[in-house]
Image (cartoon, rainbow over all chains, first blue to last red):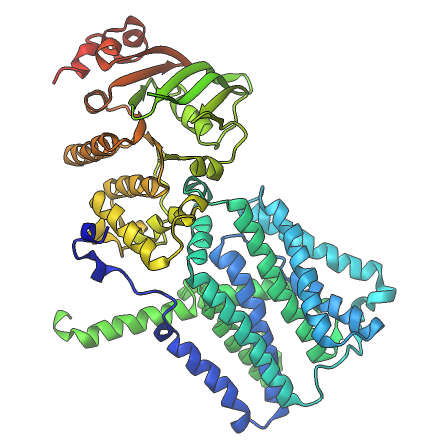
Length: 330
Length: 250
């Protein structure tokens, strides 16, 4: 076979999992680890904890929709499912968080499997509606069983992760790094090629010998697990689980932020999550027009950089680098 | 030669429409067979039945002695049947190389090799075989129609088939491209690959195949050598028109 390559060996791309491709990612992680050295405000640290958890919400959605093409408008099903599982176990049974968080992920994974079954038959907007309806069911159940779920108020008094904000921050960084690191590894492996082929053309993937049913279900399960773990972590971090974690609003925010960041990149939705959550908070100083400016910013992003923030920045950077390297061509 | 692929009373109806009706045929290992007929004759439906994209209403089909009825497309690929589509179905936002690496992830291929770099090498060899090696890092979306047709052939070959089904491989190709693809198909068959081709470009097809099955309204109306088919009254009436011999004279 090597003889047949006729020098093509040099043209073959390096493995996408080579560590050099992740230098920027490592730099971001180091920055996140060093932040508490410079930032002493508990308010800002608390905000960054929210950003870190949202990074997992968004990247888990990106695996499902950005990579595999399974349009989900019901990610709150997984987030809320994980959060309420942890909430119930902690509030009623005083189970420690190191058990409730993985269990929250497992329940969300089961919900993912359940939601994945209709996805085998439904596509595009029909699947989006089915996922939306499924998340509404859980929201409805929390209202029906309000005596146990706390209704609209939710459950206050979920066991804390820790009383120390800085320790909580580092745990949230660990959660984000482990989850998004796993996702980056997954999508850059050969498994990622399979997911992308399903997104591009299911029939083409099947004709290539890919068991589309299996991979779709696995993706729903993995996406559900990660979102559920993050939801459970969030419940403990806030010491509260409420219906906001089951709401359509949450699902829509997940979709909006991920699209704004750049679908099918993992890192794009994470970056957009940080930017938009921080923007939303900073705009509180002008509360009257906060929602207006925030919404307008999202519309501008979707309108002018439909590929998303990160792919556009990468594209501009690559163009600039190529121009610097070969100025004579321009 | 062993009977490789066999269909017995294979039928497929869509409501009142009989797309394929009581079809019987067999293909031996190493054969290269053409399938012709007017539009709507049931040719692509036949391919869909043989590859699991459709399930027959009645009838049986076996490949290497094993029934393929009720099996999913990926299971049939695992058995050794691979196909191309009439309308190309590339993974548009993936590179040409990645397109070929997808079938290398099938269970059949993963039993042989799981290493990414080795898979890249295998994909590159296949791309060189179809003349796309210099475009392997381009997105499939940026390829011309002719290149996409070649990409589909390479992708179906990457599934390491024993039987290759080609659905109108020459459609939309220029004369030179048809000649190059014909040479490739011929060499694959010479290497022992069994091939069935649906094609409307009859001159090119008749030069390539040793046997032609003709369908009309889902029914097999003829099965024979290109010369026999060109002279067959039923085929002339249904599809070729008068002077059918012109398709087999060089």
